[in-house]
Image (tube, rainbow, N blue to C red; front, side):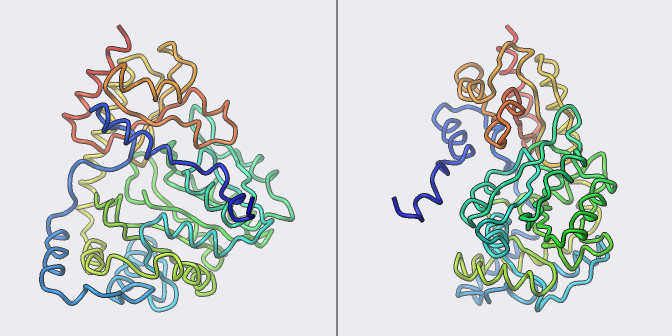
Length: 385
C-alpha cells in the first residue's frame, strides 16, 4: 500500500452524507445535518444576485479574498471583540470554515505532532489531523454539562504537543467555553509555546453564555488562528465563505496550504458576504431569539417523548441520551429512526475516540422552521408508543 493511501485509511464517508442520504431516500425529516430551512437576509442575497447579473466578479478573486471582504472581517473583529487585524496580512478568505480548518491543520501540524482536540469533535478535525500526519489527543467533554476537564487537559500536554484545537460554541454539545476554561487553555498555550486553532463558526449563536474569543486573552492574539464563516450566522451555509485570521506568520502558513486546495472561490458571493458582516446588532439579536425559541421547542418536545435532554448554550444542536427509550446504541438508533419514526438525527459516537462516552448520545438540529420541528416531535412520539 502506498504511504498516501495509508494516511487516508479509515476516513470513509462522513456521517452527515450518510444520514442526509437516508433522509432523502426515506422522506424523513432531516434533523441531522446543521443547515437552516430558511434563507439568509434578503438584502445580502440581493447583492449577490446583482453581482452575478452585472458582472465584474466572474473570474478568480485574489487568493486571500477581495479587499472589501477582508476589510469587513477586520471591522467585524474590531466591532465585536476589540481585536485589531491588518486586512492585508492577517486575514485569508477560505471556502467555508471547513477549508480554513484543513489549511490551518495542514499548514501548522508536522508529522509526529500531537494535536489536542475537545471530544466530541467535528469530523473534519480527525480527518485533517490524520492527513497532516499528526496524532489526535482527545480531551472529553462529558454529560451532563459538557464542561472542560481542566486537569485532563493539563495531563494531555506532552513535549510533542504542537496545537490545541478548540471549538466554541461547541458542535455537537452546544457548550460555550467559560472565561476560566479559556484562561486555563491560554495558560497552557503560553507555558508550552503552543498554537491554538479556534473554530468559532457559531460565535453569534449563543443563548445562555457569552462567546469569548480566546484571541482576546493576554498573550493569545500572537498564537491563535481564529476561524469563522458567514454560513451559520447568516443562514447561508451553501455559500461556503469562511476565513482564518490571526498573526501574519500563522496566516501565511494557512494561505500557503489554501492556495493549493481551492486557491480562491465564491468570487461573486464575496461582496455580499462583506455586506452581511456589517449587519446591525438588531439582526443578531433577532436571530438568537428565533433560534432560542426553536431550541426550547425541540428540547421540550424531545423531553416529552421521554429522552434525557441536554439543553445547549449555543449552536444549532441539542443532545439527548436515548437509553430512557430502551435504546443502548446511538448509531443503531439513528440508522433505524427513519423507518421507526420518519426522522433523521446524528449519533455522537462518530465524533469520539472514547466510543463508550458517546454511544448513547444523539444530536438533533433545531435550525428548522417551528412547524417542521413540531411535525418531527409528533412523529417521534411513535417511539414512546
